[in-house]
Image 1 (cartoon, rainbow, N blue to C red):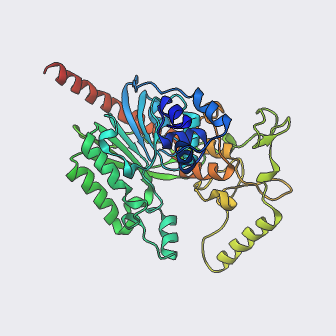
Image 2: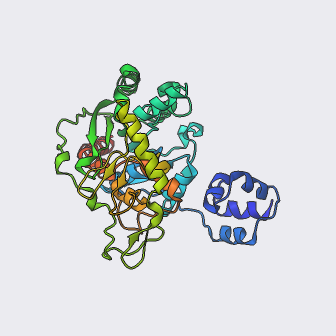
Image 3: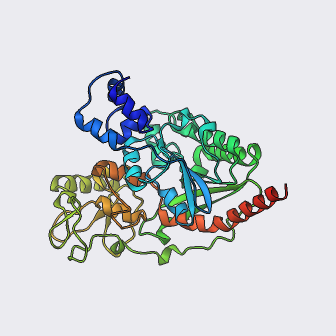
Length: 408
């Protein structure tokens, strides 16, 4: 056995976990496993890694975090007393951000959920899943149609991942689940996709379910409509009594933009100098700005609605998408005397409702990856609102089950 392999096993790491924690590919780790000599620094780092303690959930209830992204659903449910006992996320950059923000987990991040044996997932009270939305989103469907590619459940790489949610629910029978997706899920394929989902959850798995489309602009300065599907195993459930949040009373962009007046500490590489001014790299080049204006004019002349989105501090932005890294055109911030700029990744984090504390909302990846991650994430305050509505019913179910067990 190689020294690397011995140290890896002492640290309680799988090959995949070692690759993730050390920042190398699994292929490279396998080379070291088979006798190739790693750098001295790699071995020294591996020696510092200790086996994680056995899971010891201490919250009011337990949950698992599937298609976890950077942990937006988790943040909402942890804020009301939940304890995460299992995480699955396949994207290595999202894993990096997740690990940076949840470093004390007693469980490793599991990768490809399609390869997970359901028996290896711990028992849990609630299943959370923001299963991939691109196969069902309006933009995703349009793009795949243009490329003559399948979408929805016909998209084998992402669309069928709902059925992994199904097999986990079927095996573990959690007390409840919360699923999140794009608003267009209801209308995709003339409603047939949603019909399959509802029929599976309600008639095959025997859960009482309801769903609600919530616009995040009641919570953050962004028009972002997402559907939440909630199911309970042993009780009726309805969204009818959930408080209505007025989108007209939501915050404006001034709440999330860097003030650039010295009242905020500089955070490189996003802001710089004593005033914490936004770095010049976020300002569009004159060439790109001219291209976006010409492109928008071309579409207006043709009677199309496409165009960039230009906003000021008193506005509410369009939906932040995972393609924001390309040109930032959907949300551009006005600047006096020069071309507009993109949002910084920190502003994107705020726009998605992530805690502004840089110690608990770390952004350890490149701007490109950060834009993708926040564009794919959920708005945390919306999740918290759903969680707060669900919690009393969930705790009642836990109490009832406890009473049943006590009475034999």
